[in-house]
Amino acid sequence: MRAAHQFSDYIVYVDESGDHGMQSIDPSYPVFALALCVFHKQHYSAQVVPALHQFKFAHFGHDLVVLHEHEIRKERGDFKFQSRVHKQDFLAELTQIIEASDFAVISCAIDKARLQAKQDVPSNPYHLALRVCLEELYAFMRMQNQADKLTHVVVECRGHKEDNDLELEFRRICDGENQWRCPLPFDVRFASKKVNSVGLQLADLVARPIGLNSLRPLQSNRAFDVLKTKLYKSEKPR
Image (cartoon, rainbow, N blue to C red):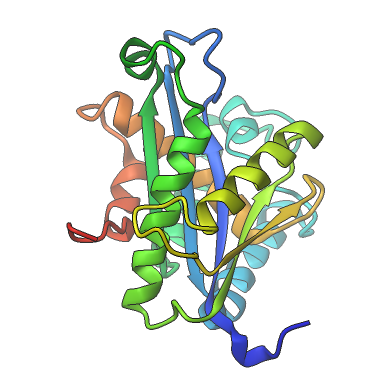
């Protein structure tokens, strides 16, 4: 166990949109998007978590519901809305919470069809996006004077093999396979799908709008418009 002063002031939650497999590419959504939501711990615990819990109490009467973008969009499980107006009001209030929450978004979207055309044996889109995002995260932490402390990066469990592959790639990048050729101060933590994590739920809500914007940048995308002010990208060269 580390001393408290060795941890950074930030916590990172990660989710993805789209399939990272390259065997078959969905022509209607041929992208893979990875999104990192970076929260200052004090703001996260004092403002973000209570706001989302209050939202759940107001709409469901309890806080056990886990918000999933796919289930909300498809109106499955707990998200069987009474009318279009009910759904629009629900989404508008949820969007307001995201807009009011102070966090940075670090993301990478990959066009899998273009990747497949460029390489005889295409790289894993998740691994490519992960390296880009971790390098950007390191630049962010340096800007916040937090690069000398440990930051935890939380991802949702996807399966034993997938988690092992991801952890191996994560540690490879953090051990020095990055543009700086230096250790990165990050540690990955895997969370069960049953964990009712506010940060993971917000990351889930963020990932698809980023993927859709990369696929159809001229299409109206209210959710992405809210995220624009939160997108972080370091100045080049890093």
